[in-house]
Length: 603
Image 1 (cartoon, rainbow, N blue to C red):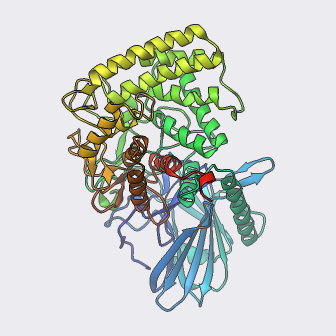
Image 2 (tube, one colour):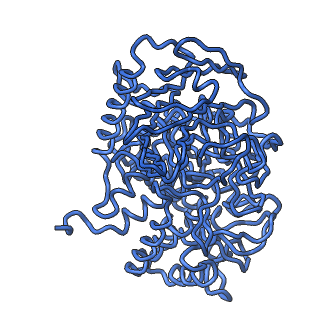
Image 3 (cartoon, one colour):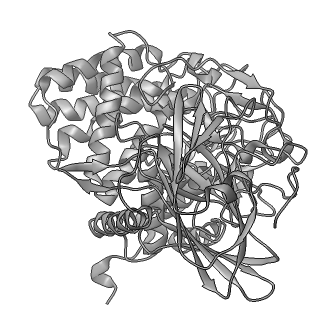
């Protein structure tokens, strides 16, 4: 496993995620930290090895390497975000690496520093290891300036300084020399602050407190009877993708993992998409994760308030800002050498009309869920009405659509239906608040929109709804017509649409978002959330056993740590696209909750 200065292995998405809702880090099967942006999700990466190709320098990582390495075992400690990796050599020696980001309650608040704790212990015999800590700066363009003391190394880089505090030999880490591991070592990488206690004792205390925090958090999840482990892992992952300080939930931890090999569909997903909000909040509600739900709602409502009755953008940074100009980085060759590496996302400039409905659907929770610390009132409703006016104005106008086409503009059915859903929910909120005239106003608008959408989006020729007004193509978002309340599950038009999508977009066990050519050619991989949508649609129309069977097959395609990316090869099941994908983990949660037998029927 010990290497020269060139990368000798190919990156994969068989990764684990650790984090604490301030930042996250991805760790490969051999215990190498290969990706982490610090101090927050959308910062420049400190560890960027995941985006280094075979010819790039073997750097941008934090590794513990075992001489004569033979095999590895990896698992999360039950119901936690704490990762354990055991490396075995060919002579029977083994080393355990325990990785986590501290998160626990302290002084009446949650302590969640930008800090990685690594505890390294011998398991059997006397493993011979090398520790390598090589942070990166400016997307691989430079390396940090180093200073060190007797028990720490300080890494100074643009905009921040980080410190490794350890009871290991500083010389062995600086010089990357090998050593026999005969006792437990603790490495704490994080803020440039002096630690005034035993490093080992601090590491053990943080481990115990973090383990306790996650156990308590999981205890209050509303999990289904079946697939509990999978749902718990998905819920923890969703929690880790939430930036607690503002409430934003990012689409994924990474940027520029290709949707398919060599496809150049490499996008930066470390931001918050408003369209995701309905589905994410729906999953949080089903899990009973009310604090994360409330924070996310507050983030969304604040963005809507800051727009000053102007236009919403499709995505925002986790601080609510829109400095998202897309650029290409030439200092990293990309995942498996498949560039480009992109920072920022041009989609923020697009017209995506569905977002107005998405925000209203998200905000609907605060008017009906009595667990909220502050329920929605007339003032909030009146503020949402301008979003309804925009939805009504734009529902039959061209936009880039759900799939963010860069050079294709149509009246997309999904966008129109989401605009309808926004007006429909305003009518229901008005009823909840006792606002008779407003209910009548929004009900009339929603009914008018429903008629027009059915008129232009239903195709007698295809015997199905289609992806755009007066079009003849399909996309997987049509599977949501029942989920969004647009059609009843037993409506013959919905049943026919599900069957047509099945015929045209399902390849093997997976569903493509669409199969027509777009700005970058014909899609080569299935979009994971679309398969979950199909599973849910099958269940809705009564094909329960088929839905359960397909759900089990899709679960089998999670990586070894139970995580999913954005895309999947329909033939091999290999994961592609940014990772771990919030949308995919939300799909898993929602499908499991829908398909599981009830607790009352389980015994």
